[in-house]
Image (cartoon, rainbow, N blue to C red; front, side):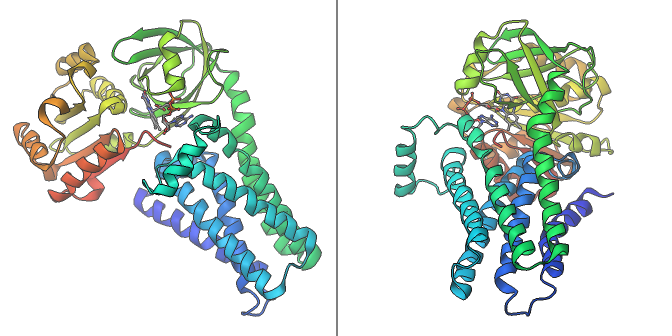
Length: 442
Ligand SMILES: Cc1cc2nc3c(=O)[nH]c(=O)nc-3n(C[C@H](O)[C@H](O)[C@H](O)COP(=O)(O)OP(=O)(O)OC[C@H]3O[C@@H](n4cnc5c(N)ncnc54)[C@H](O)[C@@H]3O)c2cc1C
């Protein structure tokens, strides 16, 4: 089915699901008394859908890329929580603090979700900008070991305890207080679905992955570290060009948390998978001393950049890639794929870097010029030429004889870089659906 249509259907289902559940669960209520529980059901359904999204369901990910899904998950968690708090206040205003045991679990759920949401927003996102109060909160938090993306990701798992409290609250209300077994079956069933997907994702999937380990064969140091991984079983999972995986290393030196990295190898290479890793923080810094022989699990593949290349059927349509820094990695995977396929379309890679010292993958990039029918490389150094803007992009497209209306644009890099390039392309009149991007933040 058409991807756009399917995306619209999924969004419609997301919005309608709580309405349908509420229609059945509140069928015996008068319109006026149905208001507060309706809000409760919307909050419950969306918070549980958040748990489902966090377990990376392949079906949904096929239509929405994981970075977009994660951003949606974060925003909707806040919306669902705000609706849940409104439900709580409305119920207390109307009926007081009734149904003691059930209410305690509802309150505990809100408390847990709220604490984790505030901590996550402060540590894992750049939300709220540079307001003084946010800066003070961030500085205070930094004194504690928890103020680290990886540790916060672990703390995030406690949301499942909150989801359990929420389910106890909802089920005791529907069974003990309302005596409505149909509503309890529907609401409980949705919780069971979300909970089992979460358990599968967090516990069963890692066990399965551990049975299919990879061995680090070539950690090669250049400007970024290139890592090759060979499957112990000889079987590599199928993937598409430019996708990414979550890597977990089984070595006491490295934290057990998984980290996302793009595949720079071609899907046709069934011998190994390759990653390129930049020293960006605690975890990736330790990679610089990675030794051959370390065991790893590889979870994936994820990401939808491949849709662009596979969707180009007209030879006159060019593929224009804008990579910022390490954002080159998915582009390398796509270019390897292009070399295998002898992709006939003109391909331009604009690689923006701080300075010439950051320039890497020189042999690989040079080889693409020979292997690909029509490949142009445009390195761009910010310390020499300033940041990419509309005028510079215009010149690059003109120099490479790109008809900007007959091209698909792929963007990957730091958010300010992607925002600037996207804004410049939109200003030139390029339709939004021709600009495709993936961010390196989940
Ligand atoms: C889809 C995707 C593809 C990526 N591909 C590459 C690649 O090919 N090469 C490369 O060098 N880097 C890649 N990254 C970035 C890489 O995952 C982070 O640089 C790395 O996880 C940082 O961890 P750290 O502890 O070294 O740094 P930290 O200082 O702890 O983190 C720096 C930033 O990295 C992100 N991050 C940290 N830990 C995690 C985690 N466990 N899961 C998700 N995000 C995390 C956060 O945005 C954080 O703010 C990719 C990221 C994403 C989302």
